[in-house]
Image (tube, rainbow, N blue to C red; front, side, top):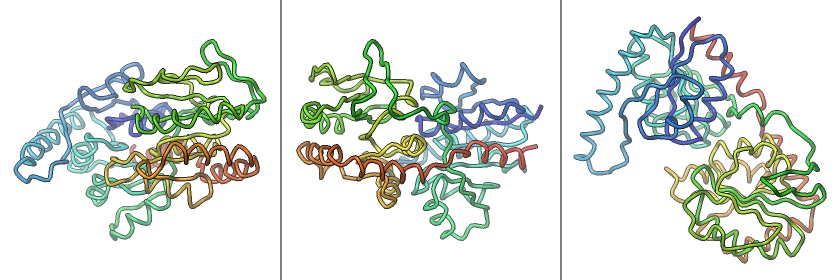
Length: 360
């Protein structure tokens, strides 16, 4: 059985797509390469063997402060090269994070294929820098392919969409009842889901709490996923308002939702597209290179979402935007259709085929 090293680290946006691909590669022996003290240390050991090496980023603009990360990168390349060589791996697949750089450079220094997947409309710095070193770069959005091809790299660029967990591919009716903990949400009510990503989003939460009472008065139910860092998470108490830090069964929740209010990380958008969920997108204002704004624009231009910058949006405005949508179900239906048009349900299959064709 061939051995493949999967390098993905940091956030759910890097880890979940890689995990979906890894679980489909049943004919490979998978080892995971990550970084200490990041999310992969909680998520991966129950699925695959995990090896960690120290690796950080290059965020500082001070040239002197970049010396340490460069030394760390060189050490990480040597460590990864040894792992790949002694483990007889046939190649590397990475979805980004700090660990992708040493993984790609180590594999290519040994003459092995390195396949990189980038989910965002604006490819990250690592993707832009290392595309020439990769055997293939796969991207989640057409816009990313256009931006990378402008760099005139000879590396093949494939548009594959972004993988989602298998449970998202099994769609149920949108009128189903939904049980969340000990609360049953009726079949015939409008359900709004507000979510701020894997870490939560206090700014988005504040906007939602300032508007939610009007939606409840209109008869909607609201599931608000606040994350664990919001001290006001339980400030509103209402029988039709469910405030939860996290909810792990996201597929049926989004399939049931009539509208989502969300950040615009690539994985969240992929899930919204697969579940055909209309959305109001409020990009994280401090995302690297403002990449969530570029992601959101893809959905806005397709008519699948409304997009607003957090700093330019008030709770009163958000309240009225949602109330207007609730008054016009045809708008939501059209947004749902447009969201579904952006979905790539066979993304995992495409990436698995790509890996099998190169890593043998």
